Length: 288
Image (cartoon, rainbow, N blue to C red; front, side, top):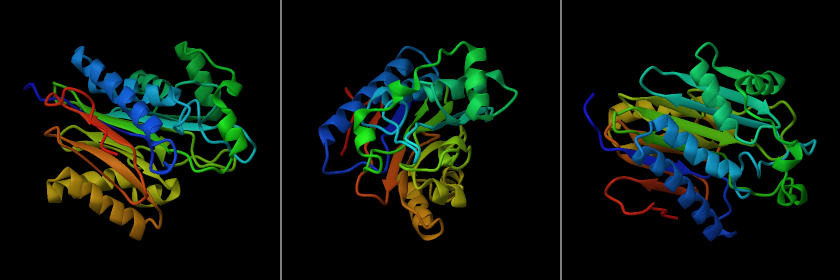
C-alpha cells in the first residue's frame, strides 16, 4: 500500500456553551488530539489513534462521554459509542452501557471480535467482562456538575477521525446521550452510518447533535455521499449540516477526513470544539 500523509481531527460536541470555560474545552481537545497523534507517530493504526483521542475525552469531566456524561431522567448514566475502520468496514458499537469507564474501548473490542457489531445494556457489560475490561463503580461516572445541572447545556458527544500512513481511515464516537433522556434511549452515536462511518476510499465521519435528527437522515453516510459530488471536505460537511437542519429537523455538527487526508467540519450550533493535526503542524491546532 502506498504511504500516505496521516491526518487526525477531533470534536468535543455540538452542545458546548460558547460562554462557559472555553479554555478548559480547548485544553481537553488539545490533549485528545495529542494522544491520537502520538499513536499515529508511534506507528499505530488509525483505529489506535481515534480510540486514544476519544479515551482522553471520556476521562474529561467537561465532555459528555464517559466520566462527565449527562444524566438520564432517573439520575443515572447510560452511554453509547461506536468505532469503524474503512478498509474492511469492520465496526463495533455499544448502547445504554453503565459501569464502563471507556465505552469506546469496549466498542473496539467488539469490532475486533468480528462476529457481532452492536451490544446494548447488560449484554454490553457482559461482553466487557468476557474481554477482561474491568467495570467501574457507576458513581465514578457521575460528576457533581451533572447532579446539580441535570438539564444543563453540556459539551456534547465526542469523536475522532484519523487516517494513518497506510491510508486506512477510522472514525469513533462516544457519548452520554441527551440530558434528561428516558432510560433505555439510544441515539445516533451507537449506530453505524448515523453517528459514525468510515470507508477508506472516501473518508470518515463522526457526528454530534440531536440524535434522532441524525438518525433520520443517516448523517455520517450522507456526508460521504455528498463528498463524492463536491470533492471538498468542508463543503461536504456544510451540506450535511443543511440536510440535518432541513430534513432531519434538528441541530448538530460533524467532522470529516477524506481519502487524501484533508479535514473538514461544520455545525449549526453556536460552538463545536474541534482540533486537528497533520505533519505540517508542530502542535495541535485548536481553532475555536
